[in-house]
Image 1: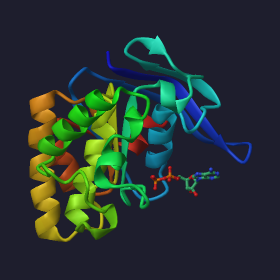
Image 2: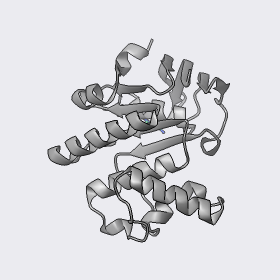
Image 3: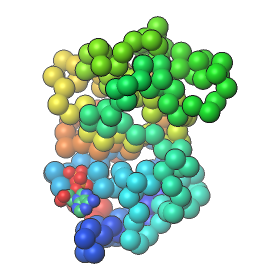
Length: 209
Ligand code: ADP
């Protein structure tokens, strides 16, 4: 099993917010969590990433209990709605950010490979601020995959894009994840997007006991 949440609960302001969350995600599978705004979707992603510590329960990644493991040691990649690219770094340095301590030649090679993967070969030296919205999204995905994460988390990744761009990026992302066998946990309020991306679509209300 790639990911397991076992009886996870989260508190906010010393009060129970989520309780009894159980979830199993198979190796190389894609699941989407759907639900209205405020239902706790991002909270659950943050628990998986290690940014939020659950009040109770366990998080297992690759069968290892990572409940108290800090985010940078979890091998989890994340893509956000607003991308959160580093504006002061070039495209190449954004993509290679997780590989800062890797040998220069290897780092250059991974950056090249990731840019190929997202259809932006040769973009290394470009300014991220000068890219289109779709290109920035591709860079955010390339950066998350560069660290070779065990799981990729997508938090409303395509929300707010115009319909044509949304459709094109979704098609490309699905093809990319299929090719690489990426395990994905995707969060959205767009049920149609969820159904296209994932084999399992779970309403967060069904997870909460
Ligand atoms: P969703 O992603 O489904 O929109 P979130 O997980 O972002 O939902 O948030 C769920 C609820 O928890 C919201 O009401 C939000 O205000 C609250 N919340 C999120 N983070 C915190 C926090 N750090 N402290 C207190 N409340 C929070």
